Length: 441
Image 1 (cartoon, one colour):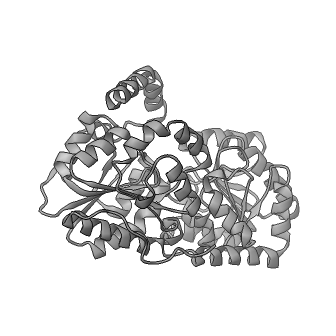
Image 2 (cartoon, rainbow, N blue to C red):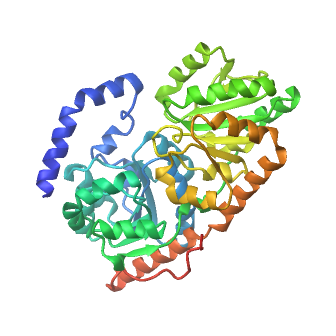
Image 3 (cartoon, rainbow, N blue to C red):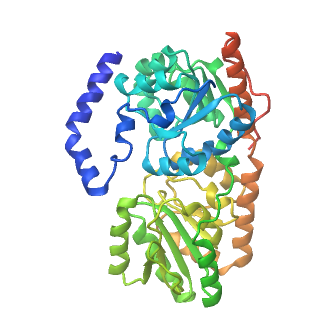
């Protein structure tokens, strides 16, 4: 089975080589960390350590943010262990290095020749995977190396479930290499069982993202606040993680806002860096004044758009929002995380495509802490919130209170991992129940 999978993966990479090369040359993607992805262990990691190692893998920015508090707690509580962190994307790598320093590297491709050097160099006692990173060769080799493997913040999205069920006869043996699944919700736990995970390996812990600490203020924040105050700019609409097809909708809504609020400001942060230029061209075409964040130097932007063409600043920019729209939701892309906006008590709007954050959105809806709308109604909902201060402030306050009510997953996750480590040392079975209950929703 694994030989067939490796052959298929190699064939897919060969067939897709022209595409990958184009992306590398055109957008600079995948170049950074290529050697690490191919199995060259960086010298900073290869240095021998007397401490046992815990390897934590977080795919991209969202997962890095989710596990940051957990890693910090692991460093405090498991001080006798060396903790290393891998990511898949360059944006995740940048954030992880900012937070965790030199013990960060790119996750290897799922080939034995790329994986084995890391297992030999690090000799991990425990491997922690964030959410659902099921790489067949990696899981097999990790288990074979003697490491215990745990999946934290585990979730199975609506989109993923169909494919997993279709492959469950093949997936189930691979998942047996994982010792422990710490699921976000009972629905996720049921879906894990449906795809072949043994029930005794699953615990419902909650969502680590509810415990994420607010980010440090981006360097631009002080300048923006001062500019807004001096120019009496506002209200401020932050549109974060927008995707193709959404910008025309939010821009037209902003034009409508300007008719009633001529000094309004939109802070627009497209999800993918390669789209920054295209979004700028669209703003020009629509005749909307805008400034690129990378070139902005304190100009008055009242009545215009600040196009965030940088990485890593969006989370703190939500602190400026009177209203926050979270993208990937007005078109069928599954939505993005709303918690960064909720941390700042912003009034939040999402579209009606939020399958990737199904339980989170349902929780916030049940507590009247988010507005869910289709494209046609989006401008009306936006104007309603901007025109009613008390309604807007109450919506933002409920969002913050809802977030705070769901904290505690980090502590429960840490306790489960400590138990797994102790059972690994004693040779026990890595199963059990959480020591603390998951908050009721």
